[in-house]
Amino acid sequence: MQLKSPEILSLIESIGEHYRTNISNRFTRRALSSMTLDPGTWNLIETMTEKVEDFRYQGYHLDELYSQILAMARFVYQARHQILPSLRFLASAGNERLNPSDRVFRDMAVNNFAPNLKVLSDKVNELYVKVAAIDKEMAGQKTPVYSQIAELREVGRYLIE
Image (tube, rainbow, N blue to C red; front, side):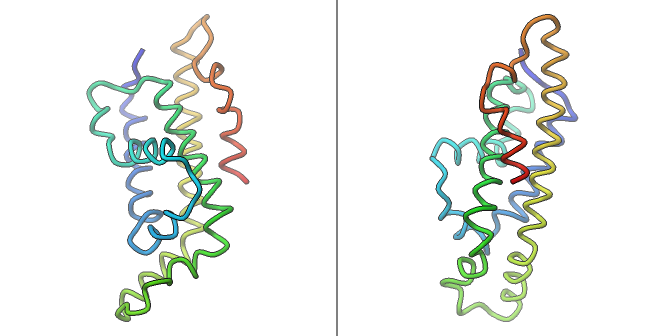
């Protein structure tokens, strides 16, 4: 079964826009690249944030969407633990020759990274809750897909800690 809910698509677009604008921008990208996430997780993040048009007409298979949600949750967790403590240093390394206005933008990106990561976390959580509700409804008497993916039990922890 495929999920084609306009509400879900809109939320995924919102997550992608927020990620590209406020999380993975030209001032923070170098710091993010230092995170220890496997290539598969990075590919799932890219799929969720960059390729929503690919799913607009065909819809999402629930297991694929859950994999993307898990990847974003892992990203949030790792960013909080690996990037936040040293973001100012990581973002300024190699950017000594920025003009004054770019320095202001860099400082804004660094200073707002934690609140923007919280917004991303909230959006991913909202997506997960809505998808799980639809999954449960679509499953009827059968077992929903989310209960068959063990790591989904960790989504809440990834997004909070």
